[in-house]
Image 1 (cartoon, rainbow, N blue to C red):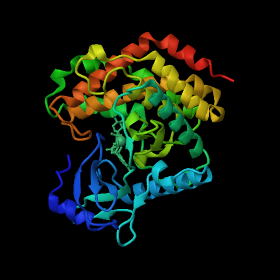
Image 2: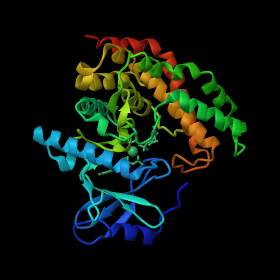
Image 3: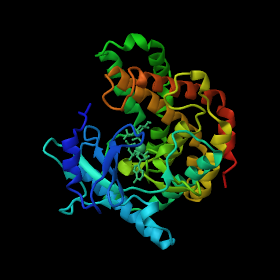
Length: 366
Ligand code: ADP
Ligand code: GN1
Ligand code: MG
């Protein structure tokens, strides 16, 4: 786990970027699990992030990707008469023109314009928000079909390679470095009994039955910003994992997070279930935006995308728990175990509602 940043380190980083006015404050912001995010108030507001360089081991390549995607999105938004400063992330460069600043301790910082009058949701408060986010991610998926994929670096190789993640999970169980296996025998058994499900999508990809596309790869609800006044989805953020991937995983990860009736780290498992109405609504929004460019098999495999993303994420949380919580930010001792448990409960509920989920997506076949 990375050290907490000192005030001096933050002040030094801030002084490297071209900001309007004097910095008045810089405070922790948002609920992301990966980077350290700060809201900076100066002549205008900014977002400063320390990139988690243990996870993103090539920050230069990462920022080149983000820069490419932001510039591409900016052009698209301009063509549609929108406002790029609100509808796309805008990178603020350092005083010497770089996309990020690296300090002596190898902390990597980047800066964005803060998108004002917007909000991010950790839970669906109104169904319309979820529909909005579905349309936004579907639209993003469609726009990326014209994106020069060959220019993208793979920021985290094998990011959604669920069978490989299963192998890493097995290793964590076997090593049991923190003597935590005893707390989660049942959860371990659950993932062991679901090994087969994990290979479904990549097997179809290998056979050419699903295409590799440029995708976002981290489509949870709080990676979309909403306009605080209109409550319309405004901007897709967290572009760190944009790289070749599967459309059904973009769909699936959004379902995993947003169609869950409970929070990702809810301790009361009776609150966890798959909301079929929210599943239907997301399917509608996503396919209205990008359905015309998807293959039939992709549409039919959307439920599998949701199940695999939930299994994979649950397994990643449990792996991290077994490995001493070194990947995802945690706020309490068993946080990752609680997260793994919600994902298991959600998969179980998906299994109960499987027929309905499959029937729902079939409605969208041409
Ligand atoms: P992580 O990878 O840790 O999830 P994110 O890039 O998603 O980091 O940022 C974390 C949170 O910070 C987001 O959920 C959002 O609330 C907020 N955020 C990030 N970038 C901006 C921005 N440009 N304007 C406003 N809020 C932002
Ligand atoms: C992380 O960065 P954030 O908080 O949006 C993770 C996702 C997980 C998610 C679970 C780079 O997303 O893959 O699905 O947590 N991002 C990375 O909440 O590992
Ligand atoms: Mg995020």
